[in-house]
Image (cartoon, rainbow, N blue to C red; front, side, top):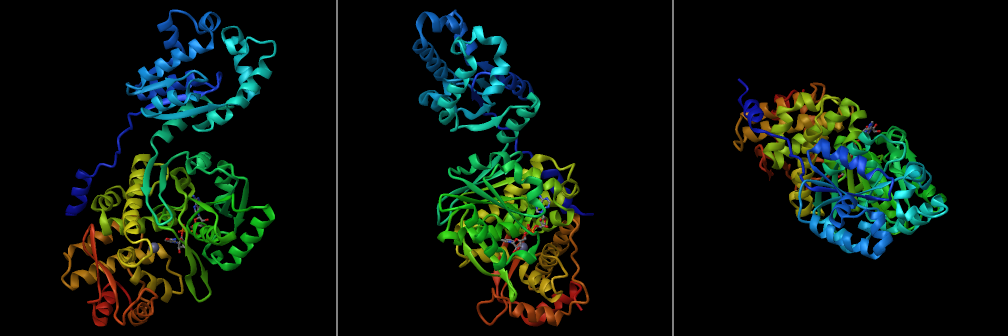
Length: 539
Ligand SMILES: NC(=O)c1ccc[n+]([C@@H]2O[C@H](COP(=O)([O-])OP(=O)(O)OC[C@H]3O[C@@H](n4cnc5c(N)ncnc54)[C@H](O)[C@@H]3O)[C@@H](O)[C@H]2O)c1
Ligand SMILES: [Zn+2]
């Protein structure tokens, strides 16, 4: 009987629960605030409040009458009163009059109760939508309403720009409501770093909002690879797209060099921001370029592989490979923001998803038993791209990011605790290397995690059941755990002894004590390591 899986299933609940904050809709008249607001209210079971309707009710006259009789300033006073009153409420969708949120105090009152979204559409589209309402819209009671709309839009552009923009043109109400719900369910994790704090946003439909989520002001260049660029770059609305060929073989100085040249050709300067859109290879190269181009420009990570989301994009390490070895040239470069759009994972090949899960399982073993139990209990759901519940994926990614965050915050430059992240990697790197990189990184890490548990149990540091528990978790996400027997134990041991992470003459390992607790030790003797390697399948 597999008891640990049973406890995991009965205890673990990945549902993060809906956020019950207010949703405040702003934007020009005719952008769909009422229709979208009502759809959201119905879906979420929230109360729908239209500030103009509320004012008409309170004033006992129509907005047009208030404007005509008492003037615009009287109307603005009504708005201020309503903003203050609504600031006390919960679970509301508040559709605000077009100018209401442009007032600093109104915005402050309402924004503290929830999140603000600004619906947008072009002037031409707005005029078309309002064709039949010109009489009841006092601002449009002019000879040329179209010119008036353009003029007002231009006046308000900078005011609206402070809010998250949602384009409504050519879209169904349901799709717009869905995008807003996705943004409401975005999880954010704050990370502090030597170069200042930044946030990791985890959610869906985030790529169209990259500029705003990351707070990018100037122009931005997207660096992506030949697989990811064609799939997702357009959504990000960058000023330039630079595409590198996909694959680890291209994580080189030559690629960085080509990117420098292309950035110069674009006229890209220090005002610009580099946005990495892709897996860990893109993140590492683009980050290295951002760290070095013109002595450093702003950098944003949009990881699209599970491995990049849970591991490579957080922590500030960037770099390229040399013919002599991986990651031998690099720099620390902290991102301004990390934006993990989970929707991108749908196209990620299954083997790449499994590779990411190896790091997830590793993070669980290092510091989060609940995360480990999630990977254990929900492996089939996680491995099915169409059956993955959004909350499950959000939970797995955010818990993994938190484990990494806690470690890199405590040890930003890799002097101590950051070594924990090498759990399973001392064995894993040796396996990759001795196989001539025929064994993939994620697979090698899975083999390494199980080997670490075996070695730890042999030395009396952990329960002997840990080895099979970790092994089962890895098998559940389709990771192999037996070391191929063509790999000789002696050769693997020799490779471990030359690993660049070795500091003293002795072999140094990160070993598990239990799920959620690891430690660093130099106790293992070469014979014990050899015995572990052979036990795990090595020749
Ligand atoms: N900087 C760090 O702290 C850190 C940590 C761990 C790993 N890394 C580095 O990360 C790299 C591995 O990252 P990786 O596993 O993401 O490799 P990768 O970037 O090569 O991506 C794997 C493959 O998946 C494709 N891909 C990525 N996202 C996709 C998507 N959404 N849809 C379809 N295809 C997609 C890529 O084009 C590539 O072919 C290694 O170079 C490693 O050294 C860095
Ligand atoms: Zn790894």
